[in-house]
Image (cartoon, rainbow, N blue to C red):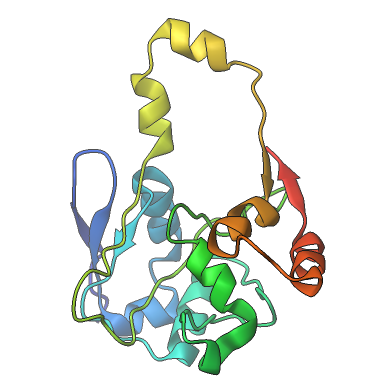
Length: 181
């Protein structure tokens, strides 16, 4: 009993809600279609699927190679230093701008976000389609940007959250590295 994969756009240029059977998602039945839709729309919403951590890992493995970030395939995101003191500052630094694996030569194909505890207020997650933003630039602006490269360093991000780091924090940040994009 294979349920067809369907989707509906969430906005004109980014994001689609994916409508599929939970069992089919876990079995990888539509993996190629999901990868193609994700590549074309950038963000997919799976409403009400409610995967456990183990199921999230199994689903992720159907659409690509999983990676361990900081020793975790599912990274609990919290600002609670009692729960995760080592990464609380890192997570706080992501409130301004973030994309997973920005320091890697080849960033991950996708990330999976699953809310476990919702905040009473705020908590919005925003996404941007940088391909569309670039396409919207004038030819003159595109020419001006041609050849521009940037260096992303975790230190630059983390200094916004921790303006007076300890020497150990600076050493930890340096281990994460820099990416020349």
